Each structure stands twice: as C-alpha cells, then as structure tokens.
Length: 486
Image (cartoon, rainbow, N blue to C red; front, side, top):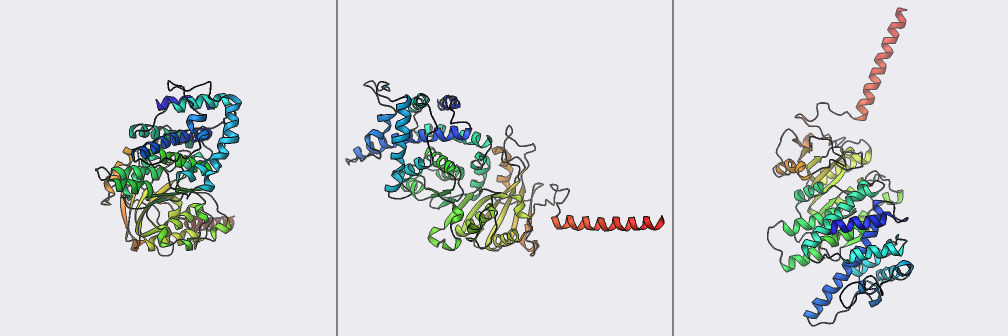
C-alpha cells in the first residue's frame, strides 16, 4: 500500500515545474505526511482525554485541521469533493493561510521540545512547491488514504521513508550529506550499545538515522517489553539532535516521528556556533553517535569557539563531541581516514587530545564506496571519555567486492567485525597497536595492517618529498659524472 502510494506521489510531482529532484520529492511528501500524522495525533489525544474524562484542546484551530481543508467528509465517510478545495483555491489557501498560520506556532510554543514548536519550525523553513492545485489535490487524496496508526504500519512506512532518503542521497547535490548507510549505522549503534536511561546525542543529525537506529536498539536490546516509565523516558528524555540545514532538519523530524518519537527533540541550529567553554556538566550526554559533515570550511569567527582552531568542519565537530561526553561516556563517530595521518598542527593536536583524554579502543577502516557518491575513504572512531588510550584495535572492512550504488554495503559485510569487536581479537583483518608505540611527535594513527592487509605501507608526504630530493641529488651526481667523461 505505502510503496505504491509513494510511487504515485512521485509520478505526480514529476509533472511539477517546481519539483525537479529527489530532494524536492522528499521535501514535499514530508510536509504533507506530517500534517496527516498530526491529524492522527489529534484523534489520539482526543480519545485519551475522553477516556480520562478531561477536556481536549486541539492543537490546530478547526479550519486548519486536516478534515476541514484537506479531507472534508460526507455522511458515508468519503472525501466530499463538493466541499474539498482544489485548483487555485487549494493552492492559495495552502500558501497564504495554512503555512503562515502553522509557522506562527513557533512563537507561542512552550519550548523547543514540544510538537507545537516543531510545527512552527517546519512550516517556517519549507514552502509549498506544488504549483498546481489539481496536482496537490491528487496527492492529498493519496496521503489521506494512508493509515499509520499501528506499530506495524509505522514500521512499513518508516522503512519506505528511509528508502526515499537513500534515493535522495544517491541523486547527488547535497542530498548525500543526509544519508549514512543504515548497515553501518546499525553496526555503530551495536558497538556503542546505548541503554535506556542514557542520553543519546547527534550534533549533525541530518535525517536522524543514528537517533532512529538508537531508538530501535534501545527498545529491543533487553528482549523484554518496555515499562511505561522506560517508554516515557525514550520519548521525552533520551534523544537530542542538532541540524543546520533546513531540509535535513524537517526530514529528521519526520523520520523520528515515523519511528515512533512523537515530539523529536531536534534543534535547528549550527552546532559549531556554540562555544565549547559554555558547555556545562548538565549539557553533557552519555552517548554520541554521529557522521559529521567533512570537507567543509568554517569561518574564522566559528573557529574561535574551539581550542584547536581549524577550518575543517569534521575536526571541529570531533572537539565538540569530546566536550559533550560525560566522564565514562561512549562515542561512535565517522570521520575521513586522513584524520589519522595528516601532519598539520590541528590534526596532530586533535589526535593527541583524543588519545590523552579518551580511550580510543576501536578504529573501523571502511572501504571506498561505503558512502555512495562520496569519493573519500572514512573510518569510524569508537572511544570512551575519561581515561587515556592504552591499546587501539583496528579492523579493516573488506566486503570482497567493489561497493557502489548498485552494490551497497549490507549487514552481512559487518558481521565479522561485530563478532570480533567485543573481545578485539586479532585476525587477518584486525590487529592491535599499543598506545606506547604511537609516535609522540606526530601521534600518527594510520591504518597499517601488519598481517596481510597492507603489502605496501603508505608513506607520509614528508617521506615522499625526502625521497624525491634524494633522487634529484643522485641524478645530479650522475649527470656530473657524465659531463666529466665528455
């Protein structure tokens, strides 16, 4: 049901001049799904209030509720197309009345962790790109037919929504920033193992994949049904995300809602604009799960917020994550593999900070093609804050094939890593390095498999330059001898 509905919606959006990419398709589907979800939430709240014999105050005024403007019904329960707006009337109502009204919720919400605040944020960031009111009516009719009240329905819809996010990432442009392969996320979550009662944080949450997988893991890890208190803890006091980009922010909220978080605590903000010195003990978290953007360059005024100043976005995020962890807190963070060996002052200082303030116990080396559409190689750093590193266990992931859009990473590819990681056992693909053996001048953490993974060791830029200079000198001597013979 859901899969065919999404296909039909995409077919309609394909005809829209204002919707040209998978990003647009996902964005426009998201705000309509959100309003349909909100209608269901209103019904649930009204039912709960009636059962408790309490008055119910609707979130939305009557004329802006779904069954007033989107799906007015006749006596038989079907959409009454004599009363339902369409064409220019529908488009103009959405653009001139509905969106401004919903945006106004941000100013009057009790706080950012409320559904009212999320409504205001979403409809302040997006605009309706469906220029034809007739196309909009077709899409509304499709979405009105969807039901995602039960856990099974939500699970199916969330899986399809994840698929839309993946296709959006594969479509290129900046969509790839919002999508991390779910098998990799699941593996990271399993290693870090967040538990009910711990606060879980992603300061660059994108489409909220890490938070969604952490929620699923924490609900089921014990193998027992959650208590009412545990369920409330997961809903209200566990997850915190921050996201800078408008579209990713909206998609992240919708993704968490479909996974079962009613009012996702995601803030629309630039995490790196926060001064590290302002982070207090009460702000700190037990778990960090993240794939911060890499390759970006931050402005000088942003760099002033960090003790180790660099324009590399991912390096600033890593400092932020270390600071945000409580003593004993755990993290799984994706970063470019060049972080392990770069010789610039910021990279060296950051590796030293990581090794001296945290136990970097595991480095997962990911193959090229792990991130579809991104040409960089990455590693995952697993660390605990509060004690220096004694040993680093490396695992080189090798699926035995070239990864790409048609041949992506899957859960089976990570099975051996997950089997070996708890004991950090050595194998052909894994090995252990004592922290005492790490060079105290460079703090180099390069992936160098002593078994059979690295037949040729990668040299540093300085070593390459030194060899070039030596070869030049040798060539000059040969030329001098030749001239002496002539």
